[in-house]
Length: 202
Image (tube, helix red, strand yellow):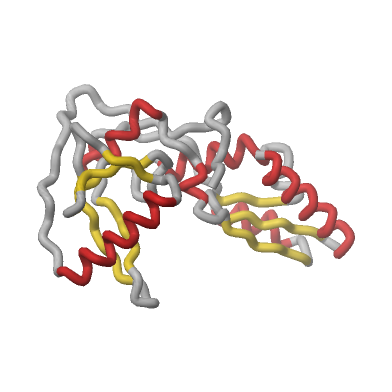
């Protein structure tokens, strides 16, 4: 996955100076869950989202969340790291405003950014702070993982950068959800073309 250009955005992890690094110890898990986690780690490693971490100061545990299809969503317990991170106050849109802005239109296309968070790279100096521990070693994220305190703000800031001239006109954006809206079919085709061209550009 190519991801967004680092000149456009990287996710940074500034930390409060008074907060000391915390290294969580490996939690016990049942063997079946360990194998599912190993499979998910391999999948993310092969996709280029992860790299091995050698001497991390921050270490978090994995929290497996079973999905309906029998697979496991691999969440990382970033509570310690999140407590040490100052809040990024970039605003998320008010949902009622988005609804009001779309209500006057007759055609909508709803889109979800595929692996959206993973399209934004971590700042190289902050990658190791995202380290998590497994039975097979420690790994950190090269891309922005889900679960970090300011990940939503970084994503929304990026979307505003990409679509500032289209928002509240042809489209509405809420983090990784996009709605193309139009009053008629011909206009809708034009708006979708403009949106897809913008996505392809970046």
